[in-house]
Image 1 (cartoon, rainbow over the protein chains, first blue to last red):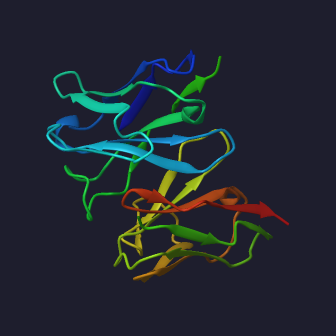
Image 2 (image 1 turned 90 degrees about the vertical axis):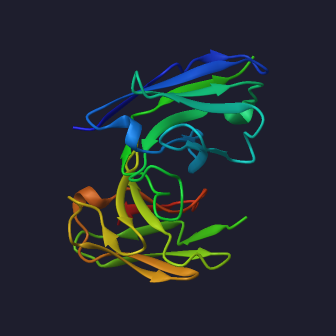
Length: 124
Length: 103
């Protein structure tokens, strides 16, 4: 059974930093691209970032480019999102999601499994 | 950037109804469109990908169609568990969502 378990969400002041983690199990983690998708309270879904199976390619939404960094450790079956220079508008539940292919491309852009999310609150 | 616009944003329907949700892309996206269902407090669930391919385990009352700039998600006979919010997605972008409520 595929399982994705996020952690690391917290209350942080504007300008602060966090590292979000996602522990994957039940599938061959190193064979699939992964993404982070967020959802602000009461709002819709926003794709944040994606990373290819080996970590060699990464992609970011314009809203987080230069502030967030996605990474993975295939030896530990872990996905990470380093979030810096946090703003109030970054407040959201952050979901870890698996893609059906190794690359984030036209055939593998959708997410077939999702974690339950971790809440990041940015407030003074 | 390609924008996705869903209509309607809110939909009220009864158990047994046939409902259709539309997703329009600001540019042609071939068949690169997925649909998700999300219930309150839960993660999204993949329903359809490549515009019309049903994800394994999803009931056959859900169907998708379209290509280019206009796509539809149809639920043929609403069940109580189908009342939720639905999102379309293309690479990098989600639609704003359609909340399906019980009439």
